[in-house]
Length: 117
Image 1 (tube, one colour):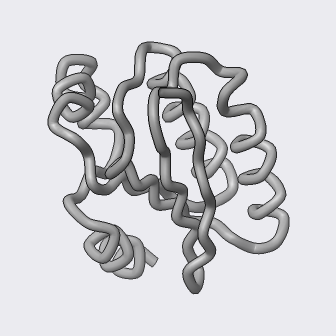
Image 2 (cartoon, rainbow, N blue to C red):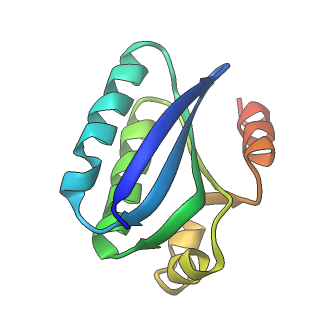
């Protein structure tokens, strides 16, 4: 399965749903550009929904870090929600679970981002 994504605007949040397998940075170039455009439109906070994510490798993890850096440099924050067990294990092994804010649901992510304002 290849990689795709969709971005949904929900009040002050951008919800980015990752779908499939994220294996190369070329797969996410459009995503980075779209996020940059949305930041210029006033959006700051991003929720990454991994509910339909199948697999990612170290390049995929690098994309996560790139998104986190981009968002934080624009004054916002990133929450990761709906993490499949296989991907959660990867985040734990790489210790990225201590870098990212990981929550169970999109609703919980919204609550946390509202609290942090």
